[in-house]
Image 1 (cartoon, chains in turn red, brown):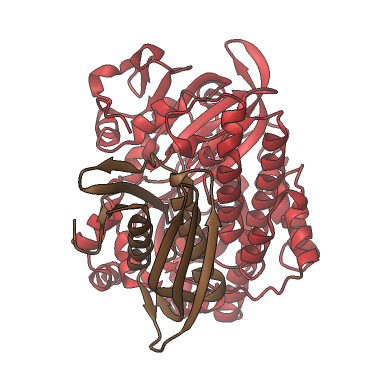
Image 2 (tube, rainbow over the protein chains, first blue to last red):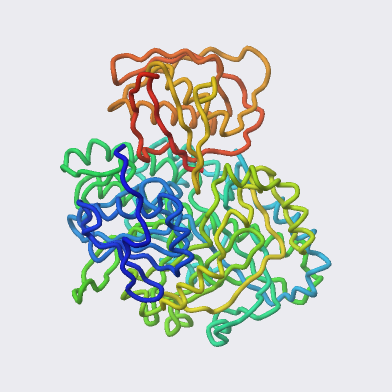
Length: 488
Length: 136
């Protein structure tokens, strides 16, 4: 690998108080500029690792339009930065599996309730334990759903609709899920036997790492009309579920990163990093990956739907009969690792593009026809979980996000400390004790794993949200604070 | 670099391992042992079963990725780990490995994938070096 000078602050042009641009003149091979949403502090944080180098590499993908967008929660990933958005023009622009990520359709679901914290507080420890017991999590865990190969193929094609047919969902859940919980174009024949073998026992599981189920209380409302439409009331409980497509999606990405290696050479695509390997969208390889990616996305929608079922079951088990209404209704479910074919305006021309979002959330503005009636005038709900023990946010997509960031915004707090450093700095058992002193119930399978996810290892989610709100690419609706966290 | 021929590097979101070997075969063995240490593999006592694995790949970097991925799959799907790995490189593009496969008793953290992120096997007078980034 050639040693290059790292990106510096003075390489950027400040376009507005919260938007910075690295022009194509910065490095030969850049096809479009890189634009970063950040304040001074978050820009300096982003300069600390290789995330902006990775954004520069991403700007060299063939067929890009507009600019590579980088969100304020950006951090270094592999190939493509976490918190990056890139759009390639149809039909001959490329699709890059590594620019979508291994955990295809990793995303967040938010359920809300009318249960007040006050009435649930006496049962909170039991509720946390029930969630930990009922939501399979951790290393090597298997789900309660027994799937035949044929049924797995149905999950691949139908996503949340499969879950609805099998008693794991309510109609409203699907209406309030990105794409209705089903991406079209899924073809199980494009998925390897290995991916199916990995996916078969894992449906309905949380996994490990930064995935979690979290019980929150609605702490502050910023947009009362939107909060009312979403059923979010200050002082009541809500639940976030963060997980993805498990080993199924990881294997789909692995297979296609491997398969695309010779394909990139065949299509004479030169890349600065082999993890960015890609193929034209209209090539046989590109089409097959899109069909396989849709299968993994649908698997993930079904997975979060089954997790929501387990969460509802836990609430009924612990709070049934103890509070007046223990029902949980869905606010929304969003993906933050996905490639989507969408129509956008680029330099005044409307065109179909493949938007790669890796650690970035779709944030479509008001009027989008894919939203349910109650949300259409408001814009698409956006769910931004914070780090463990800190706030999370409910936002709305805006017209400005359509104009500036291919209808995208941030996805979380964004790491700032390596996992190795977090384990050196923080002890899992001490962290759990500290969070419990602050009134947050913690159930976790691994103390070192807990330490890696310590809040000190992440940026300040409130600062990240402040930037996207001030830049106009999202609008604040509500802030949540945690009262129970369940991790693998 | 420690005597095991691998060390963990700082990486913001994922895990990275710097691996060394006097030759490609040793680099591949050290990478496998390093990956198992990163994942916190604990195994049952006992002799286990002797297994043989043969692989061919596109190039040396792909051989490293494919080899580690094969082991990851066995960890996840069959709950086994690997001891006493002996490995022979066949040409530039293949390997034959024999090892003792032993039941896994615990795994601290699963590795989702082995990536090609900036992956390049570098040659130096001290041997071969590579930095492997794992998605976790």
